Amino acid sequence: MFVEPFSCVGSARNELIVAIFIKTGAFLSTVGSSLIVSDVAKKVRFGKETDPYQRIMVGLSIVDILVSFLTYFLGTWMVPKETEWLWAAGNTSTCSAQGFFGVLGFYGELLYQAAISLNILLLIVFGWKQETFSKKVEKPMHFIIIAFVLVFAIIPLVYETYNPECGICNTTVLWGKCSTNDEGKLCIVRGNEQVVTVIRLIAFALILIVLIFCTVAMVWVYLYVRRQEMRNRRYIFGGSNNTENHRESRRIRKILFLYTLSLYVSYGPWLFAVFIGGPISESISDTIFPLLGFWNMLVYFLPNCLKYQRDHPGTWLVTAYCQVLRPQAPCAWSPSGMCADQKEEVEDAPEMNFAKFNTTNEQPATDPVDPANNR
Image (cartoon, rainbow, N blue to C red; front, top):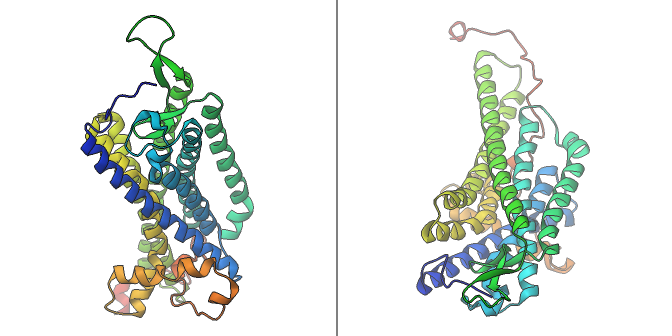
């Protein structure tokens, strides 16, 4: 087995620093995704209704836990100890397992992020209700995502192409001394270069496609809601439902923007490192990438935190997050006696009920009115 020492980070000191940052980010991401799963599990436990958005978030959080915990938090602990990387204590089997779940989580994260954008796009722009999305799209969507990621995770496993690279096990080939007498010559001793090339090209293409799709969806939703706002200014409506509907749409627009932003923050540095290369850019991308689950957790619970701030004026947003997140873990999985009599301190904000109503087919109650005539 041939491994170039510190080839990705430059020195032993950098290796230690990067490893600490990666494990910290992966830990935060794992906790964040676990809290989302815990929140939805608590709703199911108490008999509350869940919608496709929340179920998509459960799928996204589960695959994020796989890649954040098994790939980045455990990191070199699952890498074969023969590599002599920092804290390497694994073997070929643990390396293959880490690579398998890493690819599973990587592709799953991207596809579920696209599913969030698709869900919101159909709700806001095309006037779908969550019931319609659940009946027509949700089940096939989950099946396609799971089947897709399983196929692309199994292929490298069959060709023994999960091997150590830069402190983790990834789709790469393993080099070693050739069986010939040529000294210094290296040959592939494990893995398949063609499989590596195909998997990496697909990964790169999928990142670009998802980023483009999520960006287009975000802009489309923004323009649609903006157009509805301009339409509202031109008409006087017979009730307050339309105003509330547009307020809800604006809230959802903000949520979509933040989810797309978290995707850019996590995958943008990775794309930058691919084009630029070098130990510094790769170290930065490896440090930021595992935080996707943490960013998603902040976005997912943001509406409840804003509601807590409205109910408790003067409360800092950080404090609101602490109050909202504090009861999540113990009550979701506890025995019936532990939380049976406990009242939820922070109820779900209306913003969490994605598009209970939409405004696509609304018609004005009256003809356009000149604002000057109503003074």
